[in-house]
Structures are given as structure tokens and as C-alpha cells.
Length: 159
Length: 422
Ligand SMILES: Cc1cc2nc3c(=O)[nH]c(=O)nc-3n(C[C@H](O)[C@H](O)[C@H](O)COP(=O)(O)O)c2cc1C
Ligand code: SF4
Ligand code: FES
Image (cartoon, rainbow over all chains, first blue to last red; front, side, top):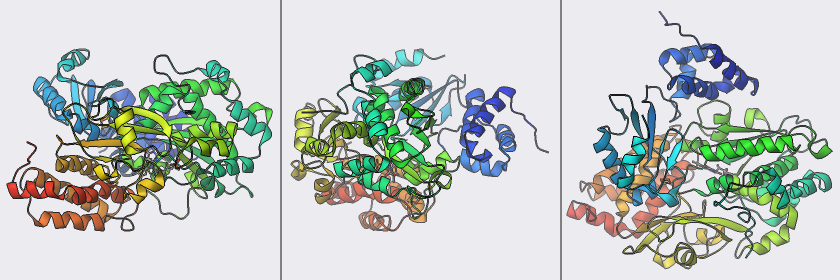
């Protein structure tokens, strides 16, 4: 009854490289999840089973690893992921206002994706740029010293 | 005033590449260490310098290295740089990595040689994209120049270095949880003993140190332990201090160890921002006890901050101002800790969400008088000795000190059935 999904040759090459760097196959579990997420945007149940097969561990064991880490996405995400810092320095400097603005503009709360699949909004722990709070990241880009009037311009840069 | 760690850091230009770094004296310490010193000499020099770990616990670095077995058959040993920096309010390691990646790499190679490690990792938090890019480039340069890889500087010593980026979880910064993360497992902490120095990554002897700790090593090798001690005031060396919150100039400064809280806030951070008054501060990240006005003259070194009832921690201070509700402030912290608990042991897994819920209800004006006793109880149940690792006791530090210094504010929320700050 299992839906057989296979890894692409490219994915397998990258995962095998990670396996070659560690003493045993399953030690590459996190790297393998990262590889697949990099290619597919997220890790579906089927992808998870395929990775587990390749690592020669049970899907349950890999699932316990995948769900432990915040940034292994086990549900689909939008084309752009907004990570808004909700930790202490950003709290003091008013991240709630930034959250309110994004919520009103995109009509999504934390954990949600816009219907057009353009943005997913997630809370994130301290981004390590507390002297420039409040801060957020979109994909690989960091934005600091945020004010509400800069948000339109920032969001307009992502499609 | 000497500032060895930041002397070659400027954010008005890209960080030094290999050639610029060498021109500024870079990799001289590595040359000196590998060609004129034995591993034991290096460990002793570092131990004599009294360098204490900059990751939070403040343990003598050379002493830590001295527990690594140096005789017998240990074909593989590991050296790991803890660059996970996820403690809220902490942002110093990012600056060191983005500002001068070669300094960290040089410090790591010397340290790896001291324990005769053959493989090293930088465990970097995923969010530090720019640091990752710069480190990867610097590592490539170091390999090409023969500072990494086989037979370094013709000495016969070989070292591989890998950059590993995590996938997000505060607990990965705890050194034994970090080892599990590197082994591809859930990042739950491990029982000690055995200590990682004896049985760490993949069961091999392993040293884990913080970014700032490693960055100090080349300077100690170049200038000697006495010089290092003389840099500081009330403790050895300089320290990267930081301030965030409602001050005029939030930022980071390299200062002699033991600057007072007052000088840090008033001189370096420019004092409180217009219209805001100082109410308290967490001196070294989210998991340290509040210090308040009466502590402004406390020297920010490990011993003095401990004597004042808190911890120097990471040395990056978060200011609580008079416009910010202390209950909301602590609620935000406990939300973080509850979310980041690894779930391994019961007091932490169950106690932190409970704490968070109580704080939320007090903040909303739905608190009951008994709630304060419940919170007091948690600070004991989750305190040192009752949990598997230091996350839970760390989470209790800001709470217990808030209950001590700002108890009236908690009580007002309960008696007025609302948050006075709203
Ligand atoms: C929950 C938790 C998180 C930690 N996070 C970090 C971290 O991000 N970076 C770090 O250097 N040390 C962190 N530590 C401390 C490490 O366990 C360890 O003491 C440190 O890396 C040792 O380096 P040092 O001796 O150079 O300070 C953390 C500790 C705990 C309990
Ligand atoms: S104290 Fe918390 S974080 Fe540490 S082991 Fe226990 S559950 Fe995990
Ligand atoms: S608290 Fe937001 S960047 Fe540190």
C-alpha cells in the first residue's frame, strides 16, 4: 500500500556525498532532509519514506528527527517564507506592530500561507541581530531596523 | 586600550581575505604554534592565560582541553566550534564571523593541534547565511594556502574542517545535544559523564568551544598569557559586550573584561533612549537573572556578576525599560524556552508550558493570587539539579529574579485585573 516515491539522481548524488563524510549512513539523516527540502521546498510523507529507505532506517526513526527541527518543513510552504523574530529584543522594540501590519496586508497569521502560495509567515526565535531589532528574514535575506512604512517595499520584492 | 578581537574588523569594507589577513599578521600564531610549540605547551599557555569560555558557562578553556587523552591510540579526535548562537538577545558571534572569518579559522586550527584533533566542524546556525558564505570562502583560501588539509606547514600535522549548518533548535547549542545533532539524531542532551573530552562525537574525544573563545587563541599564542591577563580589568582578556533594547545606540563593543554595567549602558550604548527609563537588565542573554538599578556599578566579569546574583552568560545585555511590562517581558522569554525545550525530561517539558500559561493569564488580567506561589514553585522544581540539562534552570533565572525585583508589578496585574502598561 505504500506510495513509492523515488529520489532523483541529483538528490541521491548529493545525499551520497553527505553519507561519505560520516562514519555510518544514518548520521547523514539531517543533511538528507535538507537536500530534499532544498529541491522540493518541503518534505512530504512520501519523500520522507524515500529518504529513510535510502538511509536504511525506518520512516518512524527519520520522522522523529524531521519533526524535532524547526526548519524541516513537514507541510508545504509558500514560494517565499517570512521568518519574523518574536524574541525578547524584538519584543521590546515592537515586533508586534510589524506582525500586525503583515497580517493586515497579507491576511495570514503565523503558520499560514497566502492562497496564491506567495508567502508563508512563521514566527522565529532570535535572529541574532538584536541591536537592529525588530528583524525578519525572507528566504535567505535579512531585514533589520524594521518600521511599518518599509514593509510594503520589502514585501513587493518577492513574487 | 587594546582590542585584539576586533582590531581588523570594519563593516565599511568586506572582511580581510587571506592575503590582507596575513599582511596584518594573520596566521603568524599558527606558524609559531605548529613549528615552535608542542600541543602540551599550547594547552598550558591557554590555561595560564585564564581564558574562560565565552559561550556562557565561563570554564577555563585550557583546563577543558587538558582532559582530552593525549596518549594511547586515538586515531580520530574532533574539535567543534559552537556557532549556534540562538540565545535571545545574543548577537556577538555573528559579528566575529562576518567581520573576520580567518581569525576564527586560525584559532580553531591552533586549538585542534593542541588536542591533536584530525577533524573539525563549525556548527553554524542556519540563519547566519552571510557568515556561512564568508566562512566557506575563508576555509577554501586556508586549504589552498596549506593551513588546512594534509601536512600543514610541512609539520606532518593534518586537519580537515567542515562547515555544518543546523536546522534550527536552541537546544543544539548545548554541547552534548550539539553532538547528537551532528550525528544526525534528535538534539537531546547526553548524560555526563562520560564528558565529550573523553567520549564525544561518534564516541571519540571531542572539544566544543564557542566562537569568541577560539578567536582569542591566536592572540594568546602571539603575545603570551601575561599579556592576555593584563588586557582585562577584573578578569582576563577583553570581552565582546552588547546592549539591545531602548538605548540610544544599541550595539557591540570589545572592552576590557570587567567594565561596569553603568559604563556599558551610559557611555558605550549612549544611555537610555529619549523618554525611556532603565528598570532592569538581563546581563548576558535570555537565561540570566535580572540586575536592577542598585547593580549598576557591578563589574561585568564572571565572578562579580555571580556575586550580584546573576550570570555574565554571553555578555550581551537586554534592557528592560519603564514602558515595557515586566510580566509581558518574562512571558515572552518563557514562551521561547517552552517552545525550545527538547522534551526529554518531565520538569522542563511540562513545567515550562505551564509557566508560560500562568504568565499569559496574569498578563491578560486573569491571574489569581495563588499563581505567584505556583510560579515560585516552578522556579524551584525546574532549578539546578532537577533537570537533565541547563536549559530549564536557565529559563528560571529571569523568572525568579523578576518575581523578586518586580513582584509588585505582578501583584498589580492580579489586583487590578489588567495590565497597567496597556
Ligand atoms: C540550552 C543551551 C544552549 C546553548 N547554546 C550555546 C550556543 O549557542 N553557543 C555556545 O557557544 N554555547 C552554548 N551553550 C553552552 C555550551 O553548552 C557550551 O558550554 C559551550 O559551547 C562551551 O564553549 P566555551 O567553553 O568556549 O564557552 C548552550 C548551553 C545550553 C544549556
Ligand atoms: S532540561 Fe529541558 S531541554 Fe534540557 S534535557 Fe530536559 S527537557 Fe531537554
Ligand atoms: S531578539 Fe530579535 S533578533 Fe535577537
